[in-house]
Length: 100
Ligand SMILES: [Zn+2]
Ligand SMILES: [Zn+2]
Image 1 (cartoon, rainbow, N blue to C red):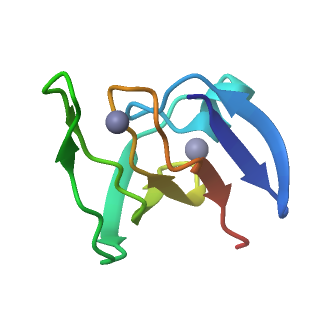
Image 2: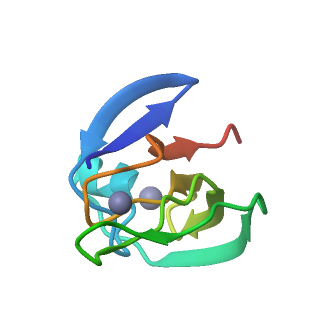
């Protein structure tokens, strides 16, 4: 699932994955150090189950939000919901730039 990058409240571009590189710096061809900050997750209960073939499913609709700051001054929230090996996803995977 691609990650939607939101700037000024609107979808700006998409990235394939997010692994420790600031997407805004990457877009501008700059390099930076990235620091993860506080992370929190909503706490609703979603029951995992095993299907008829014995495959485990956990369709976790909780949202995890992690705050990031980069050394070039970008601050953003990475927000995502769970996904499962069967292809199910909570339908949310986005990076949202914070207004300074
Ligand atoms: Zn940056
Ligand atoms: Zn599943």
